[in-house]
Image (cartoon, rainbow, N blue to C red; front, side, top):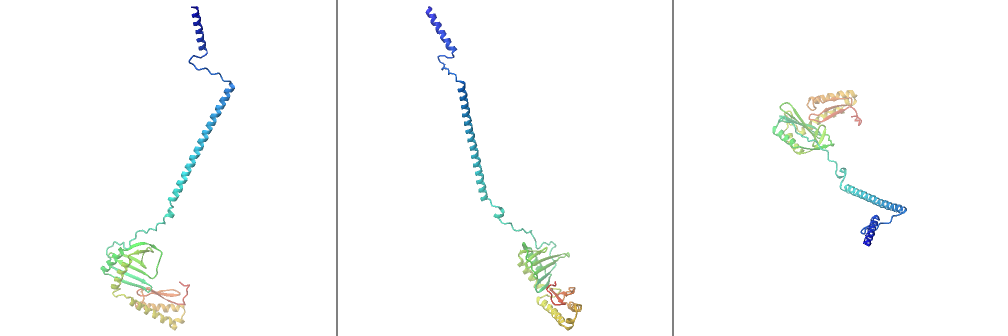
Length: 301
């Protein structure tokens, strides 16, 4: 009995010792404590490894960011290059649009049908006037004027080649339309037009049937009257009285002759104009003339 108690007591002591030692039959063995110096070295090594790892990761991230920025810059350059190839400057891709001309009507009168008209044709040979009261011919001309298409402004101007058409209406109003060398004149600006040939045909028909103060005005008659005036002026300028006279005397002789021709109907009434160097006038039917008192001077206007 005592032996059993001794065994039990020994066994109890053994178990208690194991408990105080922190070990059980199932527990793993306890590690031996690490000296302080070794622990400090291990901590420094671990911190160094973590720092190197962090630096490596940071460097990797920086390199990645640089690579991404470089790639983005390359893509932007490619887009800019593609845009420069496909987009062309407006100035180089297309020329400036032509100057637009405001819509202009040659015939824009709403006073009704004219009761009569006057056509004044100016050529190098002079001016000839034609009158017409034939409604059919007037309407033909108006239709042609309505069909005129104004194209655009032109800087080309011409002398001694114009057609002035004056329409007279029942209410006393007038409408003036002027063409210069086949171009329409508006506000001293000449415009190219389409359809002038029809207007010219209508004017020619009016010329054929035209009357001027009850007398048909023909080109041959106008030339003949002009020749009469020129012949009488030549006789005056070749006379001894004229060649020996001073400027004042020549002026008086010229005015006397032109007044006589005016009374005969060969010179337009009220067209005689005197100056120190010349007496000018207008032939009946159109055309300017003059008598100079001295030799022609190219510096004189």
